[in-house]
Length: 178
Image (cartoon, rainbow, N blue to C red; front, top):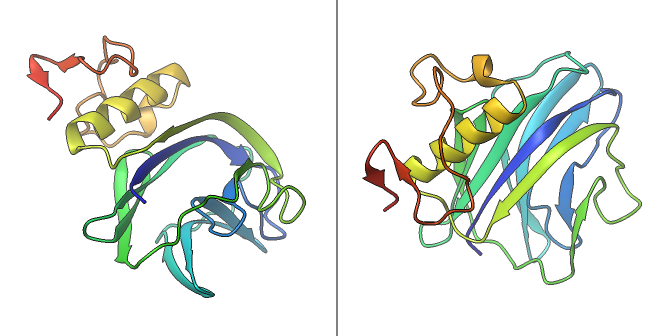
């Protein structure tokens, strides 16, 4: 399964595990909160074992919106995490598909309920190229007032993208999506 997932939101509770987005069998994407800290992770199930890609950042901040994203490149089996437009960590593994459904706000409809705010979720059925990934990051950051959270070197730190992200023929300053 190849995908890119973008999440805008924040937690109001760091006292327990919480799932922002999850599949019934496979947790595609989760913001995992533990006592006193927030850790973002992508967790993929495969026959009872898990490939876990944890972020290297940990924060006690609650009520602080951020842009979190994960990308899975199926051909390489690489799972990558980005936090506010900055690459954070990656790992390799093999995943089982999520045919059992997708939940926003819990792990399976009842377990690990999300405690916080979900502003927007975008799910793409492919691993986006760096050009398109940065475009989506810029679009979301500017839409939600988080552009100052992007790295200073981000292509869209100083100006918002000019095309709708769903326009598959968009150009970025004359450079087409590859």
